Image 1 (cartoon, one colour):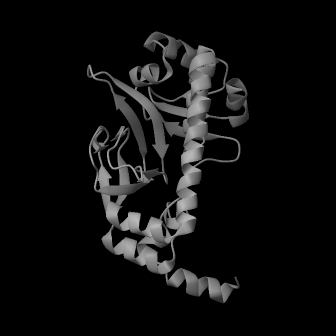
Image 2: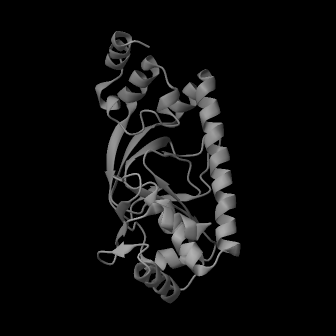
Length: 239
């Protein structure tokens, strides 16, 4: 596509979508300009405070959403009321489960977040009309399956240090901004939540964070601000 054609193509995209982080994501990246316009007309950007529920487990949600900013945690609530974090989602991830009416998980903002919300019935129609969108959603489901299997390995076979490093690396790879070799971020989870997520005690999590700090793999600015000066060094611990 030449420069002139590219400019015409971009001009046809809704203004709100041009700088959107999800523009080339799983959903919006597969839509035509006319579909983007239609989706934009029916979408709403919402700011969500940390701790607020986006989707309730067992509910029949009437909307889907894209994460524009922040971190969302996926949780499973057990019959006795206990809650287990089973995954994290970052911008520009898609939140929702097409083809399944009732949500099997809850989605809750782990940090202050912003999401773009659009009607479920509208996107379901676009899925039926757009083979590329169907493929994108299928590919996302396979990536989530691979990630779940990798996390099973982390929880079942890795040491406490490797578990904590794996979580930090997961968050670091989605942090903004970052350079080719380093990054910084605020932890989206409390120490207690990290412990539950990793199947460790709070004391063990704290010891491993201290160990990583003393070895220079991370710097801790305050209780939640983490600086990773060398991403390769952190990744090596996860292997």
